[in-house]
Amino acid sequence: MINDLSGYLAYLSKKGRAATIREKVSTECEISAITNLENRTHRNESRALVFENVDGYDMPVATNLLGSLPTLSELFNQLPLSDLILKMHTAGKMEMLKGAKAVMDSKPKISASLSGYKRLGGLDELPVLKVWPKDSGRFITLPLVITNSPSDGSTNVGIYRMQVFDSETTGMHWQSQKGGAIHAAEAAEAGTALKVSVAIGTDPYNLMAAVAPLPQGINEFAFSGMMRGSSTNLVRNGEYPAVPSNSEIVINGHVDGEKKMEGPFGDHTGYYSIPEPAHVFHVDAIYAKEHPIYAASVVGFPWSEDAVAAEFLSGYLKPMIKAVNSSIVDIYLPSEGAFTNMCFISIKKRFPGDAKKAMFGILGLGQLSLTKIVVAFDDDVNIRDLSTAMWALSTRVDPERDIQIIKGTSTDSLDHASSISAYGSKVLIDATKKTREEGYARGWPETISMDGPVESEAEKKWKRIK
Ligand SMILES: Cc1cc2nc3c(=O)[nH]c(=O)nc-3n(C[C@H](O)[C@H](O)[C@H](O)COP(=O)(O)O)c2cc1C
Image (cartoon, rainbow, N blue to C red):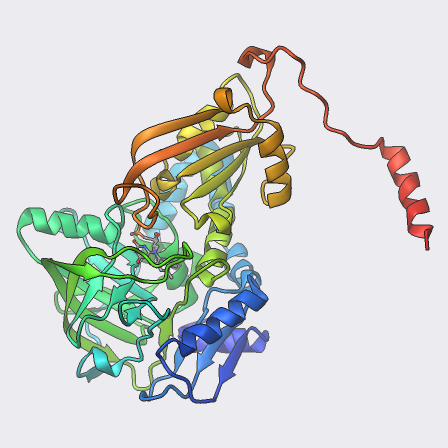
């Protein structure tokens, strides 16, 4: 049982998937540079790093907590949730309703007061990282930002970077479609400030739930309870949204509509983000455990840990996507596409136009709707292998017939290529084999392959070649 961040690090250590760095390191790009080297070298099997001797701080810093695909598979694939999603997919509406009920039933348990925490004086006491040399400052990069909807009281948890402006304020980089931003918009409409709690350092279940693109209205802490197999324990501090009781650091504060320029920040697109106005988060109080560990994430050019988490989650959420469209066989977000820039699907085509139907479906689904380039392949293509996917893309597409550009759509605000922030166009590419019914009259050529018996005989002889 992993109860908190220390327990998670102990678990990773036992598996050889965590390393401790005892040499003195700086928060100014050095911790991030070492983490980046670990990611570039070991990609999706990289270790969590614990920096014990951080120059100027008496708090250790842990990075790369989600960088190991084997760990994510171990922790999350065994759990009843995958079964549940599959059941939801195969058994139709009734099971789907039961699935939704199970999420609702695994309600978090909330206790009344934040005890056993000490109060800190300001943000300066936290070893917040400057990640890339041209970042506009130091950024809290792995905060669980918790808000309650002013309209219906529902809770949202998301990870949104927070640029430290001074010891009492930060930016709050929630993109306008994300849960926290929707709550802030509701508060602005009601003319009130929005109370926000920020939890830094918790168990991997709460962390993954915060990252997962759950439908609006599903409580991430109920979801983390399901993944863990036991309810999430939360603790309330006055009027502020309740935080996980195993949080290393808790920041209570509010946003009141004030905005300030935020960025540039070296992001997972591989570029520095273009500075834009972001909400100002006003810190009301900071609390920390007796010996807290500060958790941070380092993102940049793929691969980084967010690419690992996204790759894992795209597999995890596949049954839900298949439940929406049964023609879809697989879905893959190549990390080279920075999650929202590119989405591959493979389909078992059932009727003329099925590929387009499936692609339009993707553009209507939660955070997948931000995707810029959607490509549909047949199910004989392994879309997880980029070289096979590129072969199919270049041999099955007639641009005039198979490429559709859709103008005037909402896009990911991190995509700097569109002329207007968060507003641009999308492209749908149908890379499936075209049928007669779809107007292709020439007779689609067969893909080359050896006959089975010849192939196996040849293989035996080939292996004997010295
Ligand atoms: C390390 C990391 C940093 C992230 N930073 C941001 C961010 O600054 N802004 C943002 O809107 N989403 C960011 N995300 C993605 C959101 O956390 C993710 O989309 C989540 O599903 C949002 O949840 P929500 O839909 O409940 O808001 C980040 C994710 C990770 C893993």
